[in-house]
Picture 1: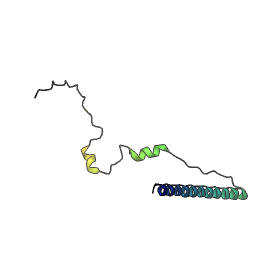
Picture 2 (picture 1 turned 120 degrees about the horizontal axis):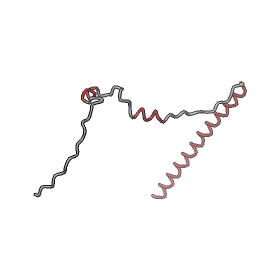
Picture 3 (picture 1 turned 180 degrees about the vertical axis):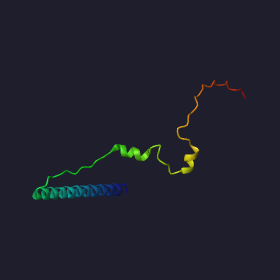
Picture 4 (picture 1 turned 90 degrees about the horizontal axis):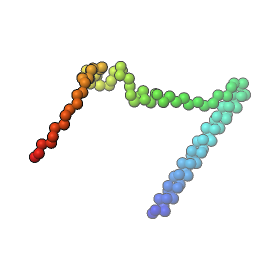
Length: 98
């Protein structure tokens, strides 16, 4: 049974590797045809560009304070910009014996 499981995992890995290779070759072929077409028509060949803005992920997770929240009832309970009083040190009490 262990041998059949290993054989199955090997086959799945090979199928995944072959499909990833075919996808990469297909994308390379499409890029090549696009580059040849651009040269034939006299246009400049522009590369594929993926613009990544890391700030966008943080803005999605941590919205700004001035935006309305999805829970309007909670907005009325929490007061924005309220002053928190100073915290004073507390002397610990000696533990009482039972």
